[in-house]
Length: 73
Image 1 (cartoon, rainbow, N blue to C red):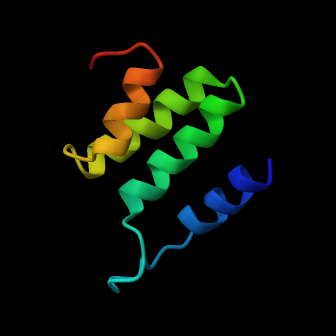
Image 2 (spheres, helix red, strand yellow; image 1 turned 180 degrees about the horizontal axis):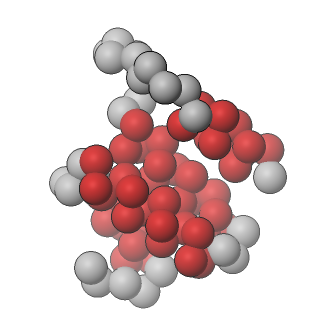
């Protein structure tokens, strides 16, 4: 629950930092998907992975997360 809360707070930031140290917003959505998948919330996880892939269609962690859910899309 803490991981989900923190990731959602990060994703709520309107002005996303463009610094090299900051993860991309797509990666944050993918990590949220990981947290939700571990909680057994498959539909929510799929939505987070889909959002990540909409932002970065080549993001491997999001592709891997979708694959872990049993989806090939």
